[in-house]
Length: 572
Ligand code: FES
Image 1: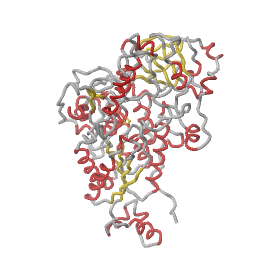
Image 2: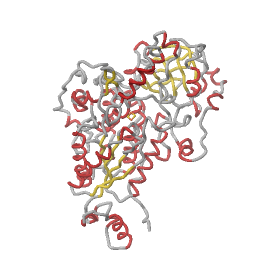
Image 3: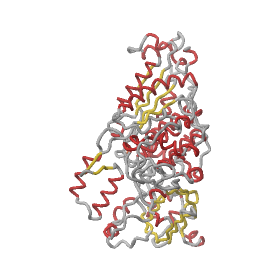
Image 4: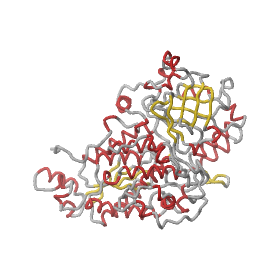
């Protein structure tokens, strides 16, 4: 009955306000649209400026058909969309803004549930953060990866191969002309990056969290089965209202446990750490950095995808997809976690065959036996830092080297190829001022380019330390998310050229070999402080005043938690 639906608070009754709400919405809707049929938003991040999501209007149409078929009223709701490759200074600056704007529009409008359409890196995290804070029934349809492009007969992994090819140009192994020619082959079709970058990771994790119909995540964007899944999602979301199945029902600690196991098994992006922490924070789920280390410990890397391996997302889908991967680690999952269907995630994993065991490895033949993200602590990162051993060089996981410090991204670009830079293969490159507050927005700059003179000598990896993030498509021995960041007084601000830094991943340590009494006498680098952004108005001002550190998900302090879906006042 209409009285039981949230939307009835707008549309029910015969008074003037209900008249206004109904009359302006009629516009061709069926006569019974306001008589007990649920109204469902399709939160749509389609945008020409988010190329990875540009196809989502077609996906929305399939969702729309499914909602109508199940008796609901579908309502397109364009929401803030973030194109990872387009927006400056970094899409991460706007993740919380997108989440806040979506949250407010879901709450403010007469809707009973929402279908979330995302794809590119920040879009699924921001949508899930928003849905968690409003806590209306919600299902995600991940937009899916693009098909594999090829260049000179070889597959191109977008993102990963950009880094690789650009380093080959700088190292003199690839001509500028060939590099330019590869550009038109990189993006073969609609869809998001086809490596195991952040978009692929978050789409798969959304399913591991239970917020996607099992088996749908990872379906390539041009594949007709994506539209079939979108249609089924539209039908299912209507049932969710009747079942009163909400994000708070699904996104329990057990669900986050399963997401962390999945993150390790797929070799997912380090960005998932800040996103999962932020989503958990919206729900009051007590998730910590250490959970990633403890739950991920001993989870094998089973997915042979770039950047840790060879293949691409198209291959993962062909080989059996996420369900086949999770079937191999079913004993590590928490069977209590349910999905949007109401059934436990583990119920979907028993009959999921592996069709290509080189792409999806058997548990007995992993790429790496222990693929969890390692959480480092020490006097250089008192509140933690992270490293992805699966993307690092094994010989550098225990390393001691002299710091070469860069105070801003501009400083790095200006000096990294200077033939006189005092650096060798054992040096530790340090980049600071790139945390949430400092840049602002915690950009993906931690995977610093290597000095040209070392590339020419054949060096392909070095230890790098930064308070920023790293692209999920990148690789290397990179210590990132150093917390507290330099801009808020973290010890990273005190490092000087020539200081020894010790990385010991097995012992989970990141240390600056400078005596405490010497460190206490040092002041934060003025060059770093001078390079910090100092926005005076708008979102950036709000952001720098309220953003929290990476170890809790870099959400704004006043956005942690939720406000539910209640609206206290009428609009007239
Ligand atoms: Fe959108 Fe990579 S740029 S997913």
